[in-house]
Length: 447
Picture (cartoon, helix red, strand yellow):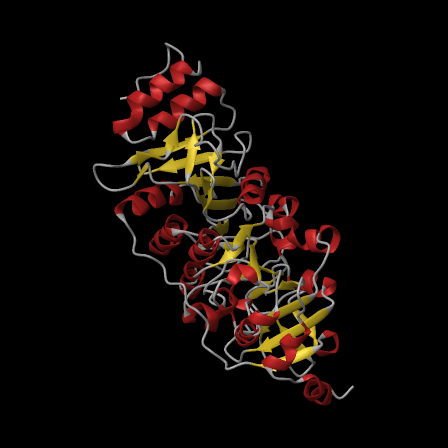
């Protein structure tokens, strides 16, 4: 096969490529940095001709052009697998919806449960000498999408890093229907927020629990990032990485020599992830780097695989936790904030790991000074989704301390969680615990 002749035969303009989309179609945009740009703009230009086009995406880093047209809901519906601030805005516009799922199951959902993928439009790295378009830093579930798609459009972006892997990180030119050469825009960068005093206190409590040789998973958010920053200041060594999201903190730790993967039980010496977002430093680091391993999410987030890795340390955020130990990390009432993602998988897998630990971290309060509200609550807010059940919760950390809920009954859990709540709310939490009959007279003072 003359690969470049095949490439040229499939090369079309964005406008030509999106002519394949028909009213009523299901169109897949992939994930995160893989969302299309040129073909999205071309599809938006066809809005007047289209109705009831349902588009799937997720971890959206910029507003899709299809949703900037007049009265977008007449033409398009957005369906997100995981919400960012952009996705939340789309939901608030009334033209978007969230798809509940455990992220580890997403490839299986495409292969077995999702009825239709009419067109897949995905941004990729340039074709290599073997005819493969790399999916870049979002192997995720994209091969499963392509396997189900009736028509595949790849949009080439020379700025997309080529992320090496073991499998399902690239698609061959022979499997592609149309190739669009985009304008090669730089990738959107996600910069970490500054470290707050609360972040630092929580991170300090977690870092002292991490042994040399631990394998790390850091979730999205300021506190997991703070842990990475404090590890950089520590004497920890021989760390490994097996994570859903790859972030800048891992790059910094690698360049400092703290990460080498030498003690991992599987994928030794490789930093394994399913999607990545960060600064240009990260994109440059993962490009063609044999120490990096980009894999589909059903490999990365598999509970059994996580459990195989000794001293696995999982660090994730939460919106709130109730006195029973139920964790809500994705919604506030019925308002969708993010998604289930891989939190439950990593909470379970880390606990099953020999020497492993799962940490859920959160500030004790939120809101403006003088109007602060507690994140440790008697029961979850009505409508709030339980991301991790009380039976799975292990370590919970706030700036006031850390508690391990494993092996504790209801009154012991209430006592432990109240001890790390903000002091201003402890009295009312004790009263609530008494009303719910999960507080004993012999419980320790809450002061």
